[in-house]
Image (cartoon, rainbow, N blue to C red; front, side):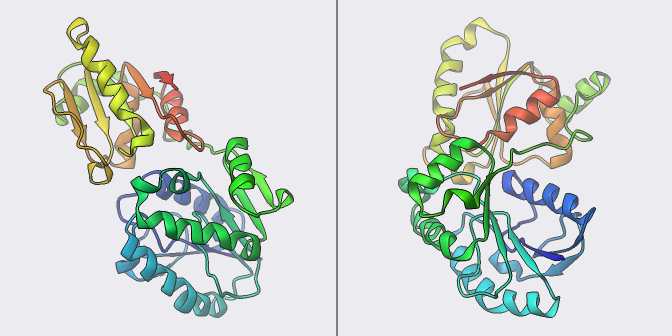
Length: 291
């Protein structure tokens, strides 16, 4: 068997699904001949370069350019490389492809529930969900909740859906050396103990409620609120306050330090497929408050 991984959506600043794809790729490459089709090297396994202009899973124009690419160029690459199974780490697959088996991971159904937040991307997502019954040989999901939602909103047969819980890299996410705390936080201009939030700033992450709660108690505590997440996907502009610090993106290597040095990690989302950040924070020995 020779596995191909459709990583055409990857960018050079991996978060959630990008990190997931990297870890799955590493795992597969350690066991079986695997090729990652990606515009960027994520340090996982053998890679075939794809078009740089089509990366980024939340850009609607890139989505449609990528749809054209994975239905024209990608099949020829797969045939050339003698791939026998294609794995798609997000709900994005060739619609007119080869006869080889296709495995797709559905992380959640956010674009169906929150159409206003995702805009035209929700239509693209729905199109891909509609392809699943015809194209996918197997669909993996990270929780029983996502499995039930997928059965509700698609025509994928239950026997095709496999629940495979997300994991984390225990060599990376672990309690970090406390002796490095002062220097690390100083490098990031963090002077006070902090409450941590990590995630996208879409409304379903419920950051607004966390900020509201923080503002109501900030005069009673010494902590600041540290928010790590890309602000360009925020629907509403976050509240500005000297006690709230925003970091748009932090590297994968530094994330475990932010988790470890936080006094508490808060995950207030009201809709989540799995909530990997909760697992990562717990692995770093940080107290967690989760909805």
